[in-house]
Length: 218
Image (cartoon, rainbow, N blue to C red; front, side):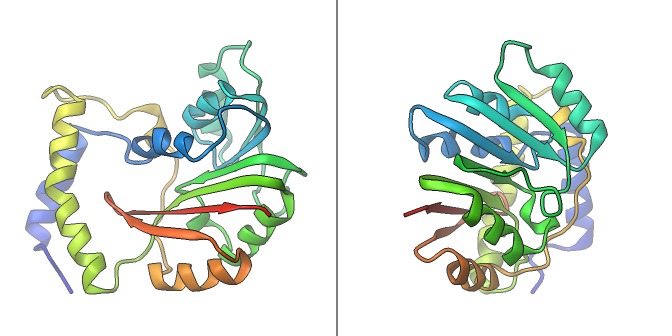
């Protein structure tokens, strides 16, 4: 099911390149609303330029941030004041998963790069009792609802790009320079697999081609 022609999609890509904005950072404040006001240890998986890790550090005693890309991790380290309790590490989120337990685990636009069920099992294992897992992910559009939400996001995306850049062409922010890939799993597949590993997980489709997952360790 195609909503827009290739010509229109190319025009939108040119617009987004001229007025870029970080769709993932758009959800950072929402993520913080799912978390306690203070917590001891946090882990941010796929930390990129460190924007979310720095926000977590305002509430946490210690934050560990891991990413497989050494270039973006080095940039994150440079952007982070030395007083912040954040440790950035280049690591594979599965093979080199940093041992917990963590009171908070976050994962934004990263889990579609990983073996999904295996990653969730790692999060489950290393989340402390009473801890909170928050994921913002990407899924492959399949159902009419998926395509309709994607169509609604297109004018909203353009409006956000214009407003965030105050109508002036801008360079891409550092947070948008990390490698990307398309999602393979549909939202329905994600829900089914997630609830098999994390009973009671709360999942929702979101605007701007994202979904969210929140789970609390009993």
